[in-house]
Image (cartoon, rainbow, N blue to C red):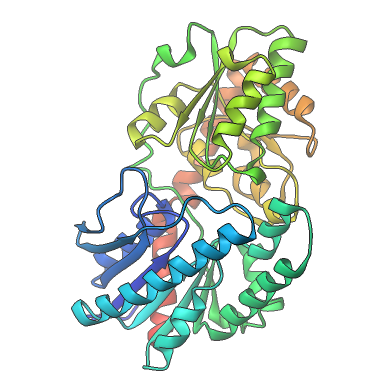
Amino acid sequence: MTKPNGRKVLIIVENLPSPFDRRVWQEATTLQQAGYVVSIICPTGKGYEKRYEVLEGINIYRHPLPVDANGALGYLLEYSAALFFQFYLAVKILMRHGFDVIHACNPPDNIFLIGGIFKLFGKKFLFDHHDINPELYEAKFGRRDFFYKIMLLWERWTFRLADISIATNESYKTIAIKRGKMSPDKVHVVRSGPKLDRLRIIPPVTGLKRGRKYLVGYVGVMGKQEGIDHLLAAAAYIIKDKGRTDVHFGLVGGGTELEEMRKLSAKLGIDDFVTFTGRVPDSDLLAMLNTADVCVNPDVANEMNDKSTMNKIMEYMALGKPIVQYDLKEGRFSAQEASLYAENNNPEDMAEKIIYLLDREDLCREMGEFGRLRVETELAWSYEAPKLLKAYDAVFS
């Protein structure tokens, strides 16, 4: 691999602040450690209100955004504000630190507008394909309308403008090649592998079980397509229909649907059996997941989730936890024998799989050990970092 020799990169991410977005932060620190000068533009967020700071040698510029978008007008306001701040801060960073490459992390897929402006001045554009936005739109709103076609158009223009694209898995690589018309040699797969120095195995915190024998854990975004309603329906089935009052549920994460899911939990009459932590520091997340006996990925079966690699799956595996999820292509690729697979979009079958594992300690241990070993030998970020650097060498070649 070529030595960077003063290469400079600007990473733009809109949906999460840095360093909270784990994939983006791992990429940024990998590049910085390889000798790149790295700057990031991202939104502010809870716990990340500073408009500028330097962390681990990385320049982070944050900007405000309107409240979480909901509906066409909300998204128009969010996207317009984000593009304004991204352009303004990109000019500021160019003058202060300089950059050779804009590394755009979706969603959304409109950051190509910023990349295109700076390509006119000789800068490179790398597209980091985190989500398949047309499928994400369909998963959220259940339709393929005018805005779905806009998503497809933005995606097409993004791929057309990109000098190099990096995909989180082979399914995304196929989309880049077939739908995005990119040459296969310009698409690099860089998976979102966990860092084992962050995901530490620590003793359980029994108090998190709220006096019950078992804890079922979840970590992730509380959004419409994440299937939290399925998890709560499974919990209600376990507690009410099966009479298993020895099980508590710990759900870690924030998002637009958090309050709605709290209300749903109360409506189902199980709120005493469910802890919603909201967004919390890593220490609290690790405490919950290390205490969990079984971890769950309730992502509903749809085209987007079938093709997407979920970080939570590999985080569960890194901590040696058995998993229950629906039978999705990329979820099965990641977890393999570390997971049981419920009938798609059937919360009762998910509940039965959870109960099956809770009653089989030896099987839980075997599945957890398999998952941990798979991360240690194949899926950890240490195996993906060289692929990221290779993609960057391709940008500069």
